[in-house]
Image (cartoon, rainbow, N blue to C red; front, side):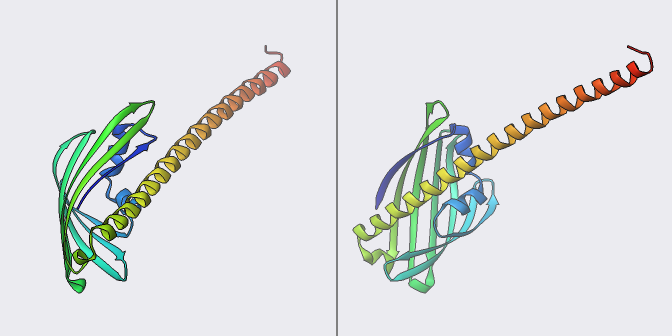
Length: 188
């Protein structure tokens, strides 16, 4: 099965890249991701729970980064299995980040998956429908995360400016108090 998907994100390629290589972000964004463990700089192990039709599979996945051109291109290979449903898969993914300017990035991804065993028997249409739903949910989660982080950054900037202004007001008030005390003692 081959899939090609894209999404436009409100961030620079470098910001998107940083999120995509953050295991905690991926745990939050990938539907069904229960845990991610960093094995090495280019190797990850994850546990994901996926329900397809009436079967719930819990895959143990090993993913390797096999090629990258930061922050524009990433290629991974992975495999996983779930003995309880007698299924396994192998996948190759390529991700492209295109800078659209104005803090906008188009993320394009191509995925080739070979699904074996009981889940492989469901057929291409069922698997593509599930993959489409998972991609949509991933995109929504990533957008929500980007929007909340930009809202937090904007809030922090406003708070910093307010503190700076309040500090300036406080310093001016201190100067006025000192002048007033000095004036009362006959000092200008």
